[in-house]
Length: 192
Figure (cartoon, rainbow, N blue to C red):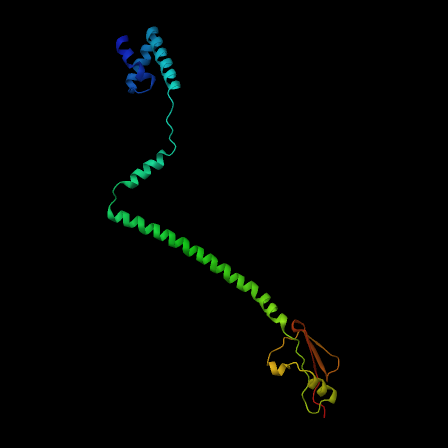
């Protein structure tokens, strides 16, 4: 059995749970029977609480970053430095490729979506085309209208009209309109 002198030396470590399990058991057994050692343990507890209340904890803000920076400043093997350099370069190239791909996709989508509007804008300034029969058997009124009109004919432009609708109940006459160019064409077949 341990004496109070031996137990009093272990009370601080007992308070902080720093004893071996068999020593912890021995001190706890002694404290259950000895009031003076129990009072001394209470004094140690009060003194520890008071000391902890006066001491301020150091600020740990930035501690981990400063440790990492210090470790990074340590001499590194050449292969490790080359590997880190190549990784940084690949990371920057990879992000550049990703941004370039995003810009290219946006440009392609813009071109695809804006093409019909650009065509419509480009055709906005064109004059309507009047096409009439240039047949020698055509009525004189049509030939006079063609001669008086200085506008180019569809045959002169060699363009292709998009016909939006056909209009005529008479099978010998065809009338169609092309609204984007504001053009109406009347076709009269050759008449013997």
